[in-house]
Length: 381
Image (cartoon, rainbow, N blue to C red; front, side, top):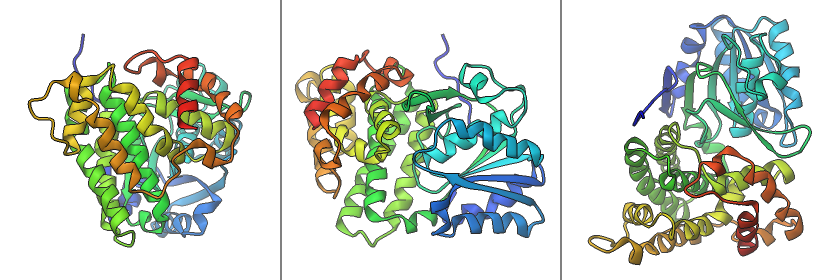
């Protein structure tokens, strides 16, 4: 059995001017680009900036900016048809995790070998259209995984879709983009990354590689959370958070998220609740549930967050992980209970079945049933 199998995009660019590399990267794959984004990014001039850079170097650019929080898998074939008609050679995904997942699938379907139904059934194209990812935020847990998560057009729930492993040619994280994010959004993105990281760290599929990356990411996320609470106008913490997000994404190239990630995706798909709000609410409860089943890992997590755990028996001191987590969350102006989100408990409970069906739950530290997820929801309500 292999201990490590690592596949990363050809280029990963992180910095305050990462976008400066975009045109050079895109031109490696052709001269016709399709930007897949959402209209909300016009307000921050992201779309104009990206399209302007490409057009300034003589590339033909088409823009699809009609994605919404309610968009479903049904748009993939529609956008792919536009890509095929315009002979697109490069798909550029510009936005958050939902937009980027859609753009990844478009790059696969635009190749012409498969439609979305076939892709979602596991049939991959022979050669996907080149795909370049430009994140509008500093977190994307799927950044280095050959998959996407979308809202299913038929069930209204989340659906995991495998994509061709050679789809993503480059990932650009320009941290100047994060300056336009509200402080609440930025804080929530930090907590969402922390949730994904702790679930990956405790996973039964974790490796020495993922552990080392996450043990470095935890203190960076903690410091970013402290800085955001202490001085919201200080934007350097967002650059640190982006660094931690890349470390976490590299770790999650080996191991997926768990129950918390499944719930955040299910509630986002069903009610369009922001994933980061759900993450902020469930994070402490997820850590509580991990303590008895992965005590050694929870001690390692607590230690990475600065808790005094040297030389202490794991089973006795794993609770320090919960204390460290609540310290972080308590500093931030984020929802603490599901009842703050104006959704009835009975409706939220319906998402447990959707979440339990996702592969990230099946690969968690221990199998988690829909009933157990309902218990978590009730506890967090």
